[in-house]
Amino acid sequence: MSKPIAVAMSGGVDSSVVAGMLHAQGEQVIGLTMQLWNQRRLPEVQGAGATGRCCSIEDVYDARHVAQHLGIPYYVVNFEQRFEEQVVKPFVADYLAGKTPIPCTLCNNHIKFDQFLEMADGVGAERIATGHYAQLRHDEPTGRWQMLRSIDRSKDQTYFLFGLTQQQLSRTMFPLGGMEKPAVRELARTLGIPTAAKPDSQEICFVPNGDYAAFIDAYFKEQGIDRQDLAGELVTADGKVVGEHAGVHHFTVGQRRGLGVAAPQPFYVISTEPETRRVTIGHGDELLRRSARVNQVNWISIAPPSEPLRAEVRIRHRHLGAPATLVPAGDYVEVRFDEPQRAVTPGQGAVFYAGDLVFGGGWIA
Image (tube, rainbow, N blue to C red; front, side):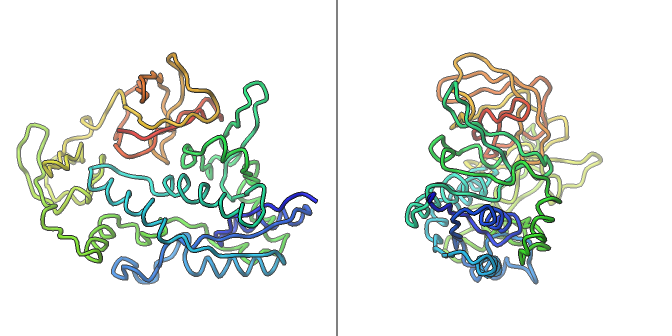
């Protein structure tokens, strides 16, 4: 008999369908849920009736209910301490450093795949399966595991998965990558999955109201950290002071709302300077950039190139992608866009594509 497959069960419809379809195919399935964040912490940012976030207490209940419905073994493992150390604290530190981090990518890199594989080993599972919308294939000539976008482009999650290693991918399954979301929900109904009609999660699990700055303020208060030293000036590109702010973590490159500056033309955040606590604002054309430095690049589908390479580059999750030339430069890659791009934001991911193939990605400096 083949070894069990450990399914990362988040309590949503996607991971529930993965468990159900593998079970229906006769696989030995073990459901595992990671408890990542205590939702009772920082009640001031929870919001009245905050919904739509992943990894809540209700999600754990739903995952257990699905496992019981399928008749598969199910376990919950508490990773709250590791999650805070490897995701929450870097998230806060990045915002204070003037960056706009992607906590879901950090979670995928350091928790949902790294630690989850350890959990799978603990229950004797050879492979893991998740509800992510992405596709994998093994390239025989190179021996590499390659990642491709999902069939359902509107649900594609490869942007958040660029940090996965070959070792992790060799043990991973993405069963939903070749399916459209409506077909997933229909399969859930066919399998009698209790979460078939459950809405998709939208918010970050530890920021249920979507207000990152309010979360950081509340986190500082909980940790007893003085926030008085975070205030600074709003300045224009020529250095003119036009206002004050309560901390650079309240701003991200490209932001328009909440600046508190009246002008005939709208102002946007152009850059943040944590050392001087200055936030520079300007007009739309000042947001355009022709290039970006990308650090800590992880090459997935191809070996690290030594020569310039053409690619389509996504610089944020909702970005459609822009044609560019990738220029390897030692420990980083310089991305040279064919056309200037708006709001190239430090801390965001830059992910490189050739059609559906994911070359890899890294972090914008």
